[in-house]
Length: 343
Image 1 (tube, rainbow, N blue to C red):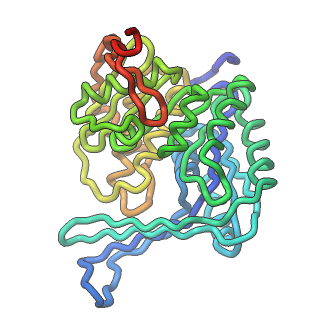
Image 2: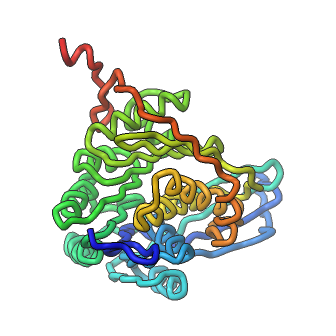
């Protein structure tokens, strides 16, 4: 890897978004069955997991190139929204219409509803063209693969891109749901960031305690993933590597919306690793970004001053070396006991 200077990342950072969106948020007093209700607040933001990662990296002062597919009039609207939100954007037009996602925030009682659309079908030529630019921009740096896969894109797409990133000397970062995540793990990415529910779906069993989460994350790390970060919602997050594991508790915040919090957290992790920070500082930045985003209305992302403020309140606990787990996780959901495998 090239030498890093002045805290800036070596190599490039590229973010891929195959299924971006325009996100609309309505805050209402209360939903009433079969009755019209008026919004107390309304907000429109560019959306999609990768878009949110790129937007957060810009707010952190870390330059990234964001690659996305756009379609139709909604896609053109999205492009205009992105003009001031990203350092470098590369939008490829495809047939169809970019999706619109909706978040409903009910005040009394406080409940959050989310409706996501499917998105346009992606032609093979478009996937390859966008991927080629993404891989070139990520060389010697980081390639971030995150978000849902639209129609026309197979579950193995991220896995193939992880391999191509590794072949080019880049570090692959994956945040996706199974089975796309399970397939990507077999290609040995640098970092994955499932939440607890996604990790449970991946291993096919409940993980009721932090110890269960850490042990399962270590299974994945030993299977070839260099770093595994698992977000635990209000409980915080753990970061597991080859030598140590770390835990950070979520700071006290005025929770308004969780939309985009996971994406902001991922951006914080990428920024930390790209700057060469130690793992405890990487986790602190990630949790601060996610928490600062959860304080915002709707799909608004974290502000740098809030990340700094919350970061000062987050203590990271070094859990120490993780014992060799009793189970070896096989990506895709199956786990086999070490005793059975040796017998």
